[in-house]
Length: 88
Image (cartoon, rainbow, N blue to C red; front, top):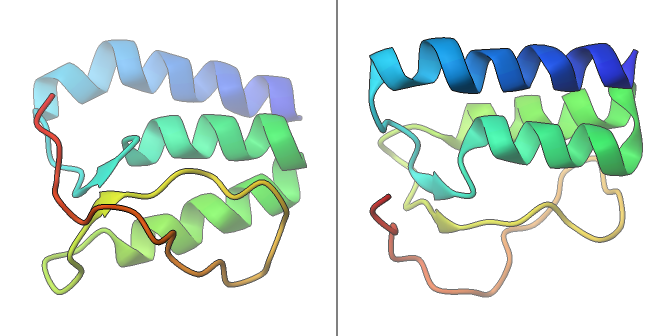
């Protein structure tokens, strides 16, 4: 299941994402975050982390650097890094 989800995320990144333009408030982008989270923690936990990230990717959130955590938590805390949004 993880491999299929990662394949779908790569297809989205190549085919759909360029049409939408840069919209993510975070680095790495939400799709890259989801891909890494699924590869690191499996389909269920990776999808949970990706969904939690997407919920936070909105105008009321500062955004900035937010890597996939090294260990799984149901509600990961933002990393203590810069909150500047890098421009791709």
